[in-house]
Length: 397
Image (cartoon, rainbow, N blue to C red; front, side):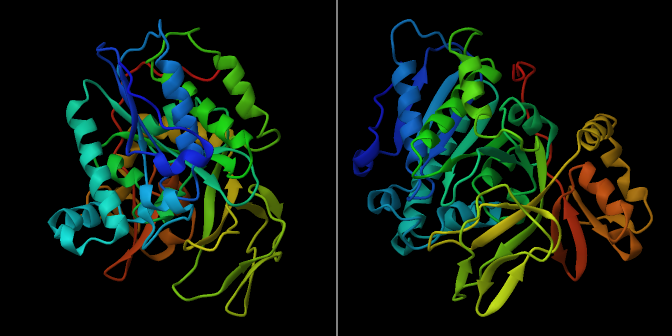
């Protein structure tokens, strides 16, 4: 049965942590969704409230369990991104373990929020009777189309590609501690959906559509139980003419204390030519290093991401990556010249010399090794272990 749902709009001050749970006691997957990880993004909470209301109507047939949570309650109450720190930047295994050891008396506002979320998420994992799929709902401060981002694993791709919006590869790999890290650490499917600009009323519709399609895609709702074609059309309308898959080529960080000002007028997915002025930061002009598209330009005051730059990934390249991974080529990539396994960290390669400059880097990207880090002075690329999901995923129509 379903619990009640939190209201929309001005009632965000009344939002509770567990927005609702729908469970007909029929075994199946668990879909857990979070809205409002950033307090200036209440559209996700509103979308989840709509879904819970409809699921609670008589005659609804669903297998598995649907759990809807609210993220940063304190920040939602005041309508700002966060109070003391970004709640969506502290979900690495090391940070989570540190928080569990920390005394609650030392907690800042977001520590308290994260501690409560961890309790709820741990309960979801322990009570699950099948695969767990996680969807994090977000909005942006600039206009732009909806999109989905994920860790580059085959299981994540199978879910993400059911949504008829651009899929972004590598976004969470250049952001440390996003909440998807918590689920990726348990080899679960984890996605983040950006619905559009927060102030746009259609953004709530986009996020709601993404949740319904996800419920159908993992087999929790029977075909024909909701208007899948209508929800897919809703999402397609906002992405006409955009590439199906793109990858991050650059993230512009904002260091503490820096004065960052984005040039006005940019929208997500706008094309920019090489040399185009994008922003100014402490007197420096930041320009596009290549022909590309801009993603998530920052026009709100908080946060450490100025913008991202993305470029399309061709269909042939995506197909090649899938074939190579099914053939488990990633298990042998360390045989290439200049590439070796990290002696202590699983799923991590050390890449040196010319291998870091030519085709080898492209190849290891195809195999999912996307996260670039410097470890003990060595260039390393890491990949996520593949997620666990059954064979019930149904593609977009």
